[in-house]
Amino acid sequence: MTKRRRAMLTVRLPEALEARLNTLAEATKRPKSFYVREALERSLEDMEDVYLAEAALERFRASGEPAVPLAELERRLGLDD
Image (tube, rainbow, N blue to C red):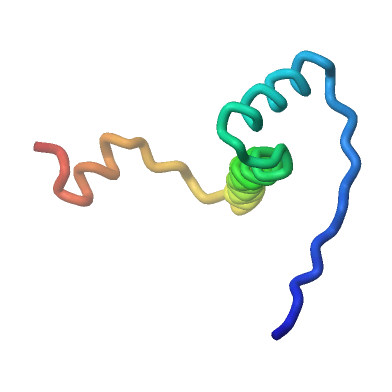
């Protein structure tokens, strides 16, 4: 059986945030690390999406291609009921 390597990270939290984390962990009987991982995964997904969208926008702007208004795109796709 292979063991998965896990990295350890030390994070300084404001007291109010630590208190909220402690309250949640105690109420649910889950470790604080569970919630930190969950929050980090969700936040990273959002940040990665923003990064990819910004990169795509920059590529589009650099391409010089004209933008297509939404109404025109809907008409082309037959969605202009």
